[in-house]
Length: 174
Image 1 (cartoon, one colour):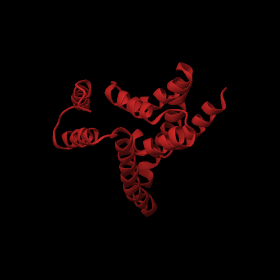
Image 2 (cartoon, rainbow, N blue to C red; image 1 turned 60 degrees about the horizontal axis):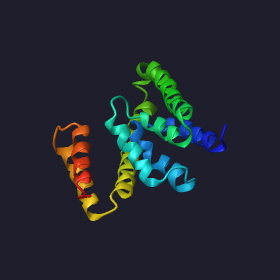
Image 3 (spheres, rainbow, N blue to C red; image 1 turned 135 degrees about the horizontal axis):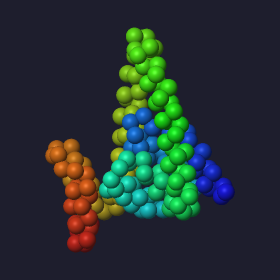
């Protein structure tokens, strides 16, 4: 097995346990490892894979499968999703069993409250990173800001917002 893929799997395993709140909170770290540190994927390809994962039906964690696929093919994509999902799934099952037992414990309440700012910070860093990567011109930055505003202020589905941005791109406006 290729050293790059083994390294990716190691990073995915560690990030799986940090992915409180979903794939969004680890996107910035994954981008740092995959694009910046190792150059396994170009920044534009990384952003395109993320957009594809957002447009596809199903869970957003398909993104890690797309990264594995882009790096080494279908088998790497399938293994990447397993490596990313299984550890957090096992941890979730264990925590769910202890939730009612620990609900009244002070340390558990502090843990739950402490994870909120961590999750918000990780989400903000992922959003900033993806904006920086994809907004390569003033018009692209405007489209990104407009898409964010539409997402926050309307009930439009993400696919509709992405489609609108794609039309602007196809018209050569971005």
